Image (cartoon, rainbow, N blue to C red; front, side, top):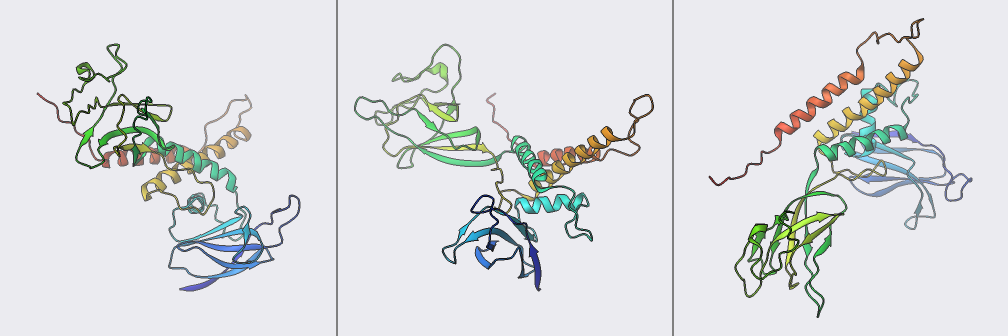
Length: 326
């Protein structure tokens, strides 16, 4: 149904420090990107279909369309299920009975505090359930008297490498490389026969040998042979991390299960802070000893739900089984 809703936002000093902005622009950032309206006031009305998920963003601006210059994000309105920081924050507020659309409309939890808790939750999610990603690395061959390149920079979101596959330019040779074992004193495998002790001994392929080991150090992958550099490359599968949100409207690469864990983690942080304040300010006996809380600690209950959700998600992950020669 098409509805019209009033939007309002705080003033900001932009583009001149200490001078209030004189123009604001409301943009729709999801599912399409467009300018909704530009106004000199700090409020306006926007019409949209409330059955369709959408995101509106308010930013100070200068100039006229289409040559507008924008300042920092001031406010975001989310309608429906849209995976962004504003949506997560709204869901947490509803769970904490801190609704912006209540009668008095007094928000208890400030945005910046909830944003910090959301960031902490995503960092922990990255450790528990890193996302599966892949990339390719084009190998660089020798140049005159300079040997082929043996180290290559990995993506910044790479936690650790799962598999490395060597692929020739024609795609006919696919070789799964082994992680280099640091034992036995050898530090290389460039011999024309390789080192059997290091795990791989290959027959020549058109006069080329591939000892086939790699190791990862300081966000780089190192190989232990000199590549020809004729279009051959490495296909890497790795455990990556979800990027941390920098604003409220950017769409995040998070699943519904991710959002559930993040919401519980943020709620727990809020209740821990509330209970810490309560313990510090009240329920002290005359002997200066603190009595137990008269009710069940909410952070403990949320922690139990959080732990169970982690267990449930781990049980649904595909099992990795390895064939063992007997």
